[in-house]
Image 1 (cartoon, rainbow, N blue to C red):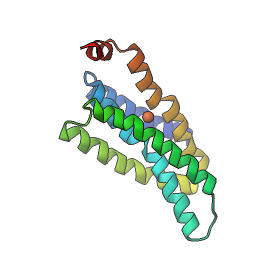
Image 2: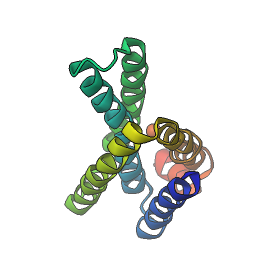
Image 3: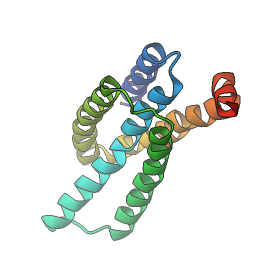
Length: 146
Ligand SMILES: [Fe+2]
């Protein structure tokens, strides 16, 4: 299962690498929109479990909400830099996020450890790519100086 998840996340990163090769802000807008999705899915499933009386994990809800809050701020940064200016970028990000959500919800319900593996990939992948781009990308450094 980890291979499948790594493959799917790898495709996502590869596609955004190609589509957004010369457009770093829209690229990270798309990636950050998607990066929030697993946390929304976890929260949805945990709320559902609580609602039907299956179990209550308030501390898990707090943790996943904090994670969405963190990703929200990454997204706000990308939006403030103009990453969401184009309709097509918003369309792609939102539809990928929707599809991704419906992949993660059943995954979290059936195989929670694998669903959490997605966040490991996010934390080590998408958000670190963002950090690397901001610290090493000459395009961003030069545009930041302008
Ligand atoms: Fe992020």
